[in-house]
Image 1 (cartoon, one colour):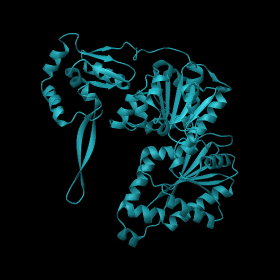
Image 2 (image 1 turned 30 degrees about the vertical axis):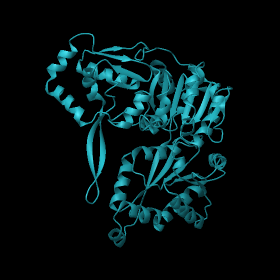
Image 3 (image 1 turned 45 degrees about the horizontal axis):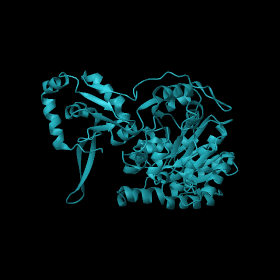
Length: 486
């Protein structure tokens, strides 16, 4: 598992770093310096010397927290995405390791009986049912066919579900295919989309269908990961999938999480992940995503998708919140500022209601994203004072009701919805005109996902309005700046 290499072992790496001639001697001493692809899950190093040689490219920084006299004290340590004693690393990292070997000129042979690194040139089919792929989609499909495993980075609204349909129904029609999602809403939305692409039976696992044992026999299965991970793994191995696709692959945060438990028990040779916000930089999350699935093999940026008219342009409205000197002196912690500067800030919530009313009065639809239920209830009350009767969607709302509200919002029979983070990702509301981000998130991926709810192109719609708040108190202001930089 990740993190087996602590500082004492790194001292061994340090010895080699100080004496590069020792590594050179090992590497030039013959054919025993090898990395062997064992299967679609693991690669094995032939010796500890190989592990030491490639470890620098698999290193990332972790933070441990220790009790101090007054607060927790952070300590940074180096960890490695490679197991010391079995000398194993995840096969999805092989491209990364190979690039490092070539860059450093290391004499390490890669034994690849499964042709993991082989590139296959195939031309993707141009249509899926009555849908014609755009040139950018054909390009991404070509990369998927070429490499068979990896991550497609593409913004919300660019047609990732259609690409998944192309993989399952066009390009690998004989493969048993498992499509993994993380929520009930996505489960039903994906099933409905797939049924438009094909007449094949689509089995769903989760959302009240968790005992549907047809997952063992039917070719196409769409499943909620936290439900499907509980299946009998003997049955999972006995009834294997040749294609596994993960929607919102940035949800894979560690090797032995829910997604990892499934992928570490699968020999699927087609492994594809989709996300608008895959992990970047050197981190445990990135090594987990790329190790279990594969590296980023294709990308469509938000900027390019807007330029070529695939996604709607974003029109930003920034509402400055008035400064209260006595409030600023009284509340300084992040918890208090969120409580009283955001959730219970009547002026902020009233400004929100007024900008929502402008859109609704002009016939547009509004989605208001919140983080905590108490905040949602307060916003709902303020909206009602202004003559707006919103629907409120959160985790306790039954799936049938959530899907009904989604359809009403899409058809503009309901013009205002307040939603918790359950609608933060992957929900398709094509006709949506206005998103109000009242959540006060600061993480880049969360902000991009929220904006993505409205970036789909529709008839008569080429832009989406996004409202955010310029809060005047330091911590909240810093979060606003971070959101704007996303």
